[in-house]
Length: 577
Ligand SMILES: C[S@@+](CC[C@H](N)C(=O)[O-])C[C@H]1O[C@@H](n2cnc3c(N)ncnc32)[C@H](O)[C@@H]1O
Image (cartoon, rainbow, N blue to C red):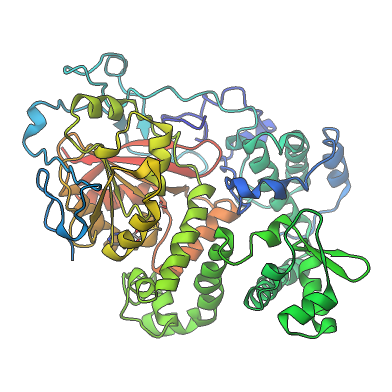
């Protein structure tokens, strides 16, 4: 379970609620902990499980790696619909099988007592300059007494479970200070402690990856480190070529199958010797498997790069948004100034496309293939990060049950409904006719077609909207925004939140599900995601930054619910009092 109400528990500096997690040496625990990275692109992607099987064999004896590194010398380390009123169905999507039941509830707050909430305090800086916690335990009477109408007070969520003994919260940050042999030994011990459980415990796997990445970065001499960046670029480059030549689709995918380079070259219309040379970049790095003499086979990684595979789609999106954008970023900043893109238009991706006047999603929607690719990639992104388990749904389910005519769950920017599906499957009490998925009309047209055969989505409402202009369903219990905030700059996200705020009943809550940054350098994958969002004019945020945007939109942070294994969290917002 990942449930956690952030009330000074694990993951926060100077916390006493670290449970039975293993603590690093005393001088290190005082540093602000760094949550583990979901550094492996397949972190929660079940299709990635095969890849992890490469890590096998018995775990090394504790201390064995640290003894080795202890002897190593450390070098310098360097247009929307009208508001949906009552049971009105937007005409464009009207269908008997897709009812809109958006129960407008303005004025019904007399029947819906205001919930008690976790108290949000001003964050304080600890001695490391790191923010302390923000949400305190609700007063015990509020936490134990049901609300006057028999509802659970907001904040009576489950207590944080004890973190796993391998909770990443106890990894202190390496980036906070210069590396030293003690740090290297600590990282090596982390690997030794966790490597035996990488195939069975997600947190152990994350901790191993986090420590191994930092360790590798630390022991690599700077010239090697610099050149290694280009190694990764060359893998990307070779994969792009092989994708365009359909090499991954031509290598047989059956168990134990392989193909000779000669046959493969003939099928993809190139010369055998050149194909062999091109493939070295991928077989040397474990993407393809070379078989002596003269044959090649898939690995779990290369299988994912085939046409129409979700990870292959994600790869293509990243090639545009990260690799191609990197080539024009200097020119972009020369044109727009050395500052954060404000968007929603005039962002690096639209600048790259020669259509700077367009927003990212306008750019996507111009090309049906691109929007399909994006939706496919979203399916990967959605599996790679935690969705359920952070926010306790009990009060939502209870109130939804008490008021079956009211929408309980509005997924704002919900795409093809994959997140609603996850919630409905995890919480069968969340009825389909109390859920709505709102998105751009073009996206919903595609999404509804895809969802027709999906039992979990049958009966949900599909409501076209433009969140930059309006949020058409009023008074639902929850407005859920997952991976929306990070697509936008502060001014743009403030407008979106203000539009959501305009739809709230007094007891409604907004849930923003995103990665939460701290004030210190995050794990590398978290930093990468923030950097990658730059190309869309978006950003990842700290809790303070979320608080500031919320305040400008007429909202306040009413709770923070962190995932224990990754930097992800659900930040809950309520109307300002
Ligand atoms: C990054 S995706 C997130 C999808 C989903 N919430 C998730 O977590 O997987 C952003 C979503 O916002 C939608 N979107 C973009 N611009 C929008 C707008 N102006 N109004 C409504 N939805 C929009 C996109 O179509 C897309 O489905």
